[in-house]
Image (cartoon, rainbow, N blue to C red; front, side):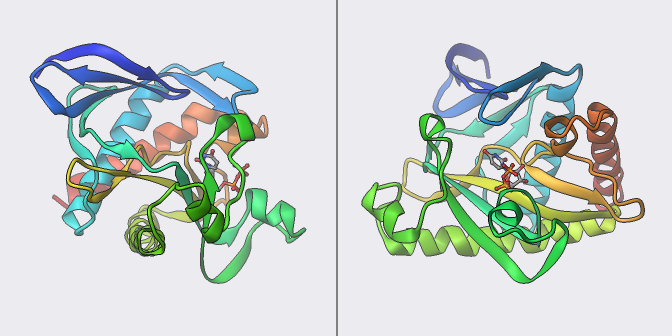
Length: 243
Ligand code: UDP
């Protein structure tokens, strides 16, 4: 497999074609970290490496537990080869504990537990600031083809939540919330896609309550990469123990 021309550059990753296959893409994790729709930016040494390893471990584990994703293999410290998919323009957020935008919106204290996981959709459009979107609006905008696809997304997101909550529990971390993206493969199958990293999850240390995710950057808490590395090391130990 050979990395070919660049197809796309996003805030955290670059996507390349793969010369031998139309069905695959080559994903490279960048060291840039952005927040607030790209308004706040920084370069962080090793961020690409930590996120590439973290996402690869999690996609592999999810596959083992029956969740198909676009992930094929990690090919270097910062690169993975994935199935080419057409990304569904919805961010699927799952919350176990209230934090971030929804806590703020309803003036509920961050850290309030939810009786059951909450699934929310946001419309992926940077120029609109990724607004919250209702099921009916998602259909109106043709983000998905029908209501069934929305319920598949919700169901898959909840299954992913059960598996991720358990793995993070095992390594002493509370999974507060996270964002998933899904794509359609050439057969029209819905596959989990994008990444699962401390950029896209809220992760709180069970013992100390310390935040181990992008909130450290958003809120200028410092030691951002130290905590990303800690998440990576704990997941690596988990993977080695559960081979
Ligand atoms: N999230 C993300 N990308 C986005 C928006 C949110 O990965 O564009 C993640 C975020 O890191 C958190 C979860 O989704 O783990 C819920 O984010 P929230 O809606 O609370 O928004 P925020 O507080 O990040 O504005």
